[in-house]
Image (tube, rainbow over the protein chains, first blue to last red):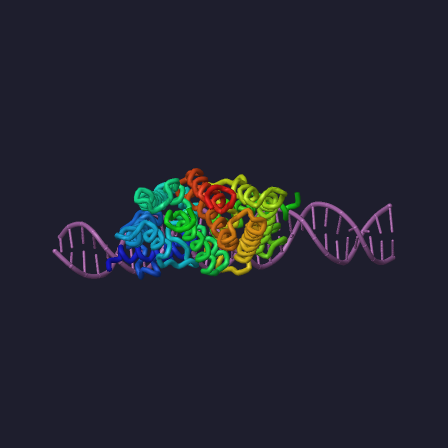
Length: 192
Length: 192
DNA sequence: CTCATTGTACCTACCACTCGTTACATAACC
DNA sequence: GGTTATGTAACGAGTGGTAGGTACAATGAG
């Protein structure tokens, strides 16, 4: 693994654990077993390294998410698969946590990475839900965009609650609610 | 206003804007027009001042929330009133954002303030929902705890999405989803 | 030899904090 | 009444350490 890659990985880990403001170049260098020169050779500074790390994380998340949302099963099954993805509630969402960081939001170059991720995720969820509506699986009055927002927000909010309580159950409870809601949209169930 | 109060207020503002890690004593002193000695006279350090500021914010939020959740209207109306409370989506939730901060979570004394707030909020929402179920307003199979979690998570997640996109509409869309869900639990509407 | 890569030394600014000090109010003594 | 204790509030200089970065020399593959 090149030093550049080691730096990117170390930065990604630390951004996840401590956020942008809470991560110093020194920490990254130590974890990557690299000297300062390496970092400032490959990257113009902390912000550019963070941007690379964020792209890395975003790619990971997209591929994991796509694994759940693609496939041949029903739309309900795929949305549930998304909600059931293995997550670490106490660690938080790699993208969501960064969106709470003042310096990330202040630097448009960094913020846009998180915004693009959530735009992509919202579009994907919305598309799957819309498919489900077209297939007659979901009630016809289902609003895919609003439901996609609700699902994303529930997951993100679940992380917040779990961290506050230091209890993964808080996350699971919120996600359970989202699953109930999705299930209640299904036409064939006795709810419609 | 005493310097102690000025310091607490300034700290509360800055914690909201920049988080715990991103707020330095120097910033607080400047905003409070206080000298360093004042701060270390009234508080043992940054953590204790932050704790006081967080209590202050928690009290504010509880009173605003209670205004919405109390009252004589129906349970649906009160939950909707809670969801419709005036908020600043781009600023984020005073408590929720801090729960994302590494140093807050690492310091149990600080974290517990956020945990207590969300415990209280969850209990209040759950109680209102349970009332609604008992009154025959909500479907009898409604799970008040899970729905309370879902509502809290949606609001918290809405903040995350709004900050990522730098667009309050993202928050409103998530909350609109929550309101639809609450409405769908109502027995008398044509949905049951 | 050359040039991308990496490490060391150094720099300025800021962080969180300690400490000695002054300002001012009330209380106690003669 | 005057003046000396006592306690609280407020101030800012100074401290050791770290943040984020620059300058430059050493290394090593082609």
